[in-house]
Image (cartoon, rainbow, N blue to C red; front, side, top):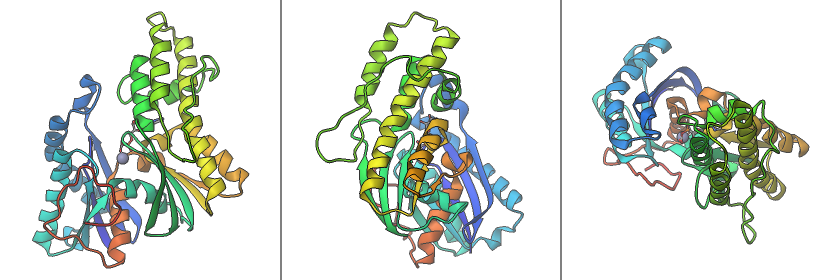
Length: 334
Ligand code: KG4
Ligand code: ZN
């Protein structure tokens, strides 16, 4: 089955074609209109999706080298995300499906990140998965495919927000995560002491707000401009604090839940230290750590096509009345 996957939940415009769960083409256009604002401007994002989506779709078709009538179904992100952005992808998907008389399915963006390692390797069940992105930091236990149980989530900022907001205080361009990662590689992670959140009770939840406040107070005292070597040390210390918070919870989850694999996905799964540390704690317990390749960690259409394909294979379909759900919190198709 060939599935077209469309992702327009935030500021990346993605279209992909997959055949039976394997990628034929995966094209993503990043919108650079937001850079000068230091964050995503929703109105600009939806306008850019309107212009970029037809082009990105055409490029996916050319890359996959298949005629348009070979497409068997369309999947698009239903939520969570920015309503105006979601609508562009959903209306494109529904229009395409209706015109060609093929099914369409709405997909939860977080579910798509969670399962995305399955595009490149087999994810054995039961498994534990973390989605760490600009909008989400959640841990799931997956006893079997299709049965996703959230066992921990952030109480305030997502991991990517912490990278981006603290990175902004350091003067790094948006999104700061990749820059911070690069600079941290040659820095000293013990240069400044940053707190690790201690949430009360028996919980696998996260909190990033204390770290963010502590970082702000410390960084306000740094002389400006920050010298290059000091900047590297600060980046390494911030990265270590964020990654420690994530990995501590993952380790506790591995302790409590049966798992044959650990997967970490979402934009922050590109982070070098997170990949190393998650691999370390997983192998200490004798399980493999599976990460999507960097292009699949960021927002993309292939993961949407893949999550949609898994549901289509179970006979699920979305009605034409289904529309954007900006705060979508369940994993069942609408
Ligand atoms: O999954 P994603 O592309 O979009 C959302 O759904 O949010 O994630 C984007 C987030 C941004 O916050 C970005 O700073 C972060 O992923 N990110 C990273 C790295 N690459 C991207 N954070 C840390 N280290 C990286 N190498
Ligand atoms: Zn995402």
